[in-house]
Length: 465
Image (tube, rainbow, N blue to C red; front, side, top):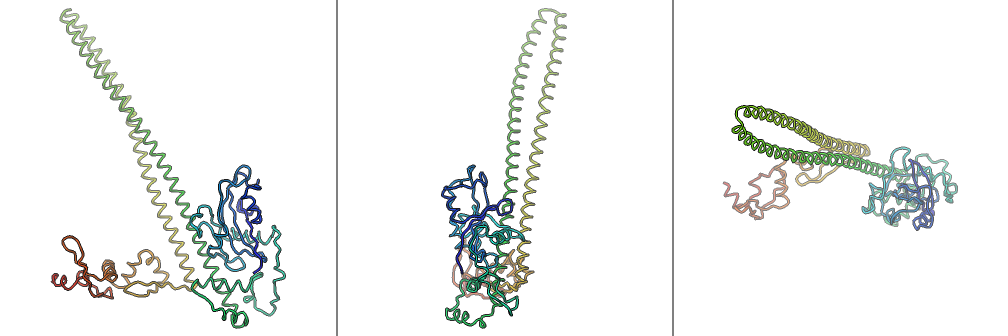
């Protein structure tokens, strides 16, 4: 492997906006210089390692904010090299699977919020990064032409891609086979000494298989993160709407309370006016007794007119107050109905998101089955299970229920047998609810287990008879 070049690529409007060496980016972080093009913006960027064949070996996708002067805001401090050293493998960009650290595949959870997910589609983020590396605007000294060896007489399928390092392909293949697989130094030297003993076909096939698996895994993680962000955003919007509706309802309730207080004040005024009328009536009665029959008739007329006026005023006030009360009650009912509809819509969105996640899992299972992956699970009572693609959703939904059906026993019986299998003791309860706890022989098969008999000691099994 040749020398590595570390660079930072900035993205804006789904295209590469700026490129610089990592040493220049460190000067920006040290506030030595600023980037006026990104003043007042939050920019998506990628820290990349490029070998001298202009092939990308690793990338860390991070976000960074600039103030109005183009300086980095806040105490931005992301260990880019550390994240790249501990990152997982992603797609193959021409020199084997690259290391990728992003929001969905972050090796250090503390920095997850400061990363972003690349576009995994055709013509997406990785394709733009490849094009930027090929343009070589940074002026990286490339030795692609000198490293290309003549390959006449070799089939196209067995030719190494341009700029690929055979030692790197061997290391990539070893890493793809797992951390527990170690090759003996002598066998590595022997395979390097004699190219005919190590077929290029197997190495290339396994490298492509690892690259496709890493790309599918990264694609699934990015889709899941996008779905989760969309669900969180919709939940926040609905929560804000609920808060707004609740504040409106609270204001309406306060207004209703004010109307109730006002109504009580009017009732008290009505009572005082009624007492005043009674007092005036007593005075009028006294005058009538003193003034004679004519005065009595005049007083009666005045009393009737006063009573009519008072009754009319009370009715008008009652109508004036009852109409706003009915309007407020109607508005409260409509607000409550809107809240119920919003909660129903939120539950529907959650079901839709669950369906989208399940569809993504089914696509991944189909892809893995087409690649020849066999799903095997181990459970007590049935040892190893070979699970087909069609049965995987049912197994993932409820593994114990699936195993119970394979054992041809009810779900409850399998749970009781599993508890007996893990801890074979007498499960008879005394009056205080305590187990007997006497060790008993273990029943190895769920079909041979009888609840209430197989999980009892000799003493308590005799008491049952």
